Length: 133
Image (cartoon, rainbow, N blue to C red):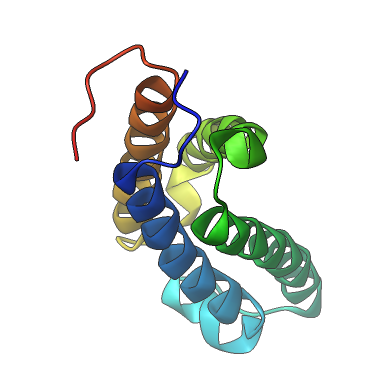
């Protein structure tokens, strides 16, 4: 297991941070975000989006810690959690696919990208595959 944080890992956390910062920002503004997904804003839907915003904000802070971490052991569990969070997000997107408009395809692509990046990060840091970057 490589103890130092690889450049690829840092890059993965930077990409994740930017994506999550955008999601967190959008979900903190449910009146603006809801129409983007082809839905009509209701207070109940707004409340659910604010709960999602708090989750995205927490993961954004986790990604920020990952960017500044010095050793793999400091962020290993964060990477594992992010893999599972994105897998469950993909399942949720698939189950609710018909509710959304075409923007859902962007969410699918972003989620799959993050799953791949975090899996590659984990495998590289654990010396299971050759370092890519």
